Image (cartoon, rainbow, N blue to C red; front, side, top):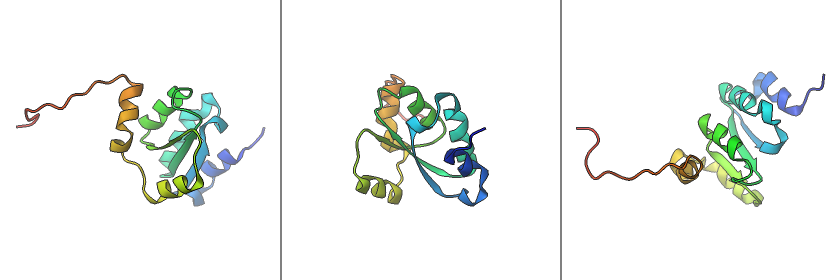
Length: 115
């Protein structure tokens, strides 16, 4: 049985409430959702690096479903990661990606939704 660094993070409580920066392609497809869930359960903030939004569409959907909004696509500069660490993304920041992935067409209603 091989143990990877990924396993070490979820098995060691000292990582609780920390930040993990992971390349999505390093996590096997069949373990992806389960692994991210375990990280989130430990209240570990996850920053995910993707090769592209298009090529890893299903993994992006899983990440968003688990409330992971710190998503980086393609090439990046280290300064971009530093900026992301200091300023976590919100749902508002990734809402365009969400709408695109789920082909969601949302229009603002001028009438009040709640009376």
